[in-house]
Image (tube, rainbow, N blue to C red):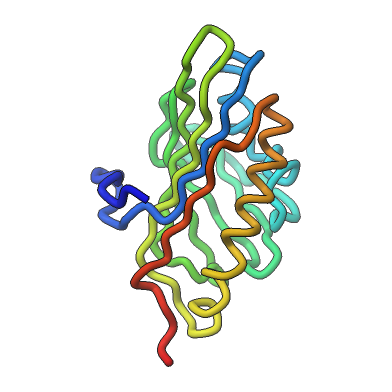
Length: 172
């Protein structure tokens, strides 16, 4: 994995996941609408149980949290919204063990109705020895299966799903 890719304005943490889905038959706006809709998360992410909407922020920004198996309620805050090219978000929660999670969803078009959706996660802190032991084992499989499911929704196929948990190992 190219660890030089990062979102310097939001985090200095390295890229820990890069999932790429190639799609055809949809515009960038179509794909972005699916990816930017919180209610669709439960359609494809295996650990997502329910989405809870809250009153909008003072600036009108939608606010919501997702209830996850293992992680409880995780609040997702949009940091950057550049429809239909990309958005960046932060995820936090009292039971969410990744304490500095930032992610980017990007849509890169290769034609009028074809392109790639790229999901990148950046973090450098996993709290708890149990999570440090298990997340590097289970998250790659969960994320790959989730992205494969998402690829079907987007009308495409999963091209790659690469993880890098180096430096996050549990104490022995």
